[in-house]
Length: 421
Image (tube, rainbow, N blue to C red):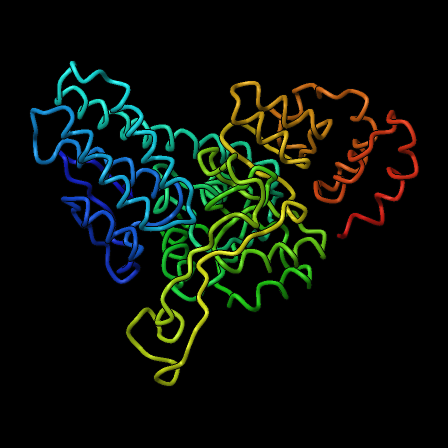
């Protein structure tokens, strides 16, 4: 089952607005229909938006058929502008659009309209296939953060419904479950549109993963009481410094996790990283309709008529609260900037991200990670003992000023007190 598919020029999606009541497929036959599906959250989730944007541009190139190569490109570019404006925060949407347009422009006009249009379709399908592979890779890399019998808290919906594969954070949860770790999931309801209650709970039930729902406002208290072992979430945009924009409510979970010494892990593909945005303060945050807050799913009003509402769709979690960012190219820890740049640069990314933190801190079951030698041999001995508890956030300050740096001893030793920032 896929949440989005290309079928002979039509884009077929699972309508996520009617789940879990019924499973309904909707055929999107033109750019306006794709844009409407994105705006109304029939299609949602950063990777799925990237795929939808890519397919929407390709669809405009092939329908209606044209023998004029310039016309094909112009139609595709017009579709790209319309689709990119549908939702501003998720960077994958604009990324998928740009990539397909770049493919079309790279083909000479002399190759003909059909060749250009087909090249754009092929690129959109390649984006979907790559995301499917990325989901599997991220799930395997994130396994080191899951302990046996762990209680894992997640926010919003990050499963197959919002990607081209098994999911980001929920894909990692699925992999841990299938690895026999016996985990239990706590899913936030995710106000105001209840993606956790409607979508995540539905996916978890389909997969047979033990789970429970929690009111958004109660989740930080669960973390503070020690009832959660790990918080794992997705992302809609990651700034160059590692700040993460995600579904509103993520920031409070990160604060609670940091204060309680619970790992807070972000799972997202490199297509979600936006190197053009220096930090989270520069990420545009979508403000949605007040009716989403003053009513239940737009049907039952829960506030007096005329009540104003503040409804940001996302909030930004500072990199300082994040334990690790897991992408398909490796696991990045602070300082996130260099690690993320290395990931975007190519295949040598795992070494780069691990080099920034010395020896990887993994559980005994993470055999692949244990066998890999650490790039930073000097830093590794200092971190071996602390790694036993596998709380990566707590040991980050130890690598800020390694012992070999002149005058750094005084800075490195107080790291113990800085662990609970």
